[in-house]
Length: 125
Image (tube, rainbow, N blue to C red; front, side):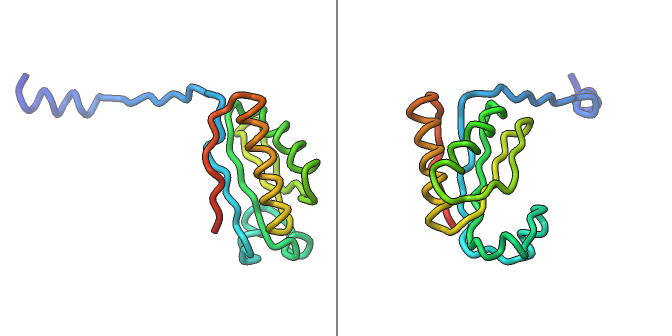
């Protein structure tokens, strides 16, 4: 194959990416004292949510697990559900920093210990 054949082949090359869902939590992050613009960009009402002082974000697969995680989050502390998406596996909770931390710990522990998930560490900014 010469250089022109390789360039022609490269132009026609197509990459297919496929998600093979495992049992995992890929992001578990706490944002302490976020600016009110972040609440608005997330579709949360800053007048209601801003006083809560922290946002917790979790992504997981299979995506339906976000429903279970949301249930655990609200039962384990005083957080409010900001967003639950059973199609993307995203969960957003708001509350005090300590409540968000407690809910994130409870839901990651449950997913790891009961459901057998691979769980990332909880990070915080």
